[in-house]
Image 1 (spheres, one colour):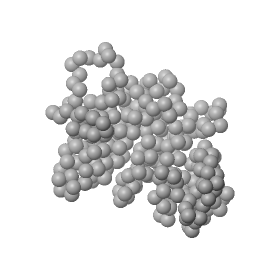
Image 2 (cartoon, helix red, strand yellow):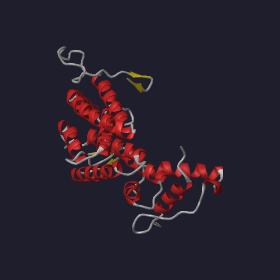
Image 3 (tube, rainbow, N blue to C red):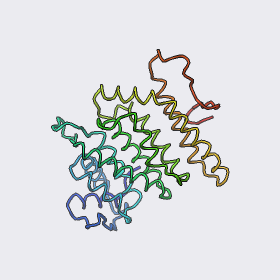
Image 4 (cartoon, rainbow, N blue to C red):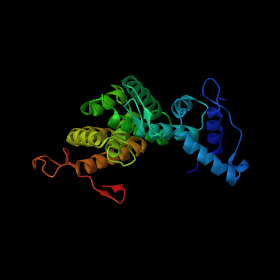
Length: 276
């Protein structure tokens, strides 16, 4: 869907340093006031904005702004995902779209994104924004050399699911796990081939542990679904399980034959986007 004109006006004002101190701006323009030429120009601007030096800070400010609209917040979450797909650890970059980040910046970015994911997991109807944030965290996990890939899943699980976490934490963690399995194999992620192979291999080796965790989530999600009729968490768990099984399916054909496909007495089948 096209980003609404309020977002376009907002981002253009931000780029020109006309944003208020708290990162918000009230826009009165509506889609009906915009011509086709203006809309095309706005679309071109937004594509350039995704790769601009202001993209990161402006996007973070708008995601924290209470007055931002859902469309604005969704675009900004996607912007963070795009930027992280193009981020590198080296001091010099060869492409203008790439952004170099130090170790400290990687750690700070991880902490900021996890905090945002925690927040958006509790926001009603915030799932679209959460999807993009999960993608951004997954991209960061794939590319952050100093983050031991073996610790990624335990870290994210512990960060999102506390002792008194509710179903929203199950939803967020399941979405994060799905994003992680999908991000490591997507061609949209700019990453060194050796780094991608390493991350993919480590994640494939963790598949059974992830499936056990998802099995726990499934029990909690199904119990809550029967109580309140909300299937989102259960669907997210199934989507995550399917993504990890697909990732595991790309493992070496020489894997030990005694390794079970699934640690739980359930069989997951994905047919045409549905689950059984």
